[in-house]
Length: 150
Image (cartoon, rainbow, N blue to C red; front, side):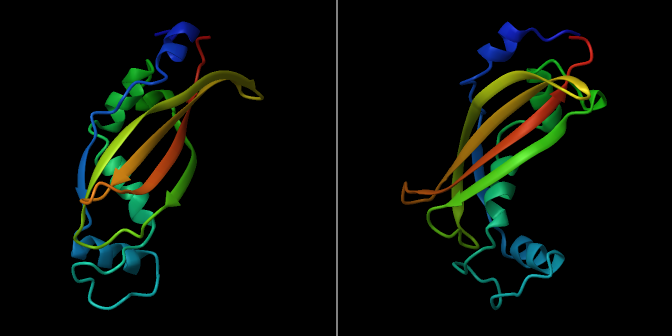
């Protein structure tokens, strides 16, 4: 299936359904343990969560699965999409037990040529908003879609 340059460019601005994410105490403990990061006590409500939870919340509450996201760009997992970059900005540290609203959209899309051929570089960004309506953090990512049929 061919995905045209016009389709790619038209994807910019497309919003994710979004959702909500709660940093559960057990998950905070498990993440810290898996990363061999120092723990901050008992992971009770309100304890500061590791910044990696900005990314976990963003992808965990984007409102669609990876297969559906790939399909937005005429691709599937079999086509070999690759994770590009991730940039996280924390305005207010995330807290264990807190609920965050996650909203996001496609923010960039360009077709490029590299040593291995043609590919699309798609950027998408999420905002995490806390219960007080403040932006707690943002997460900007990209995916590389190989285009063997272009």
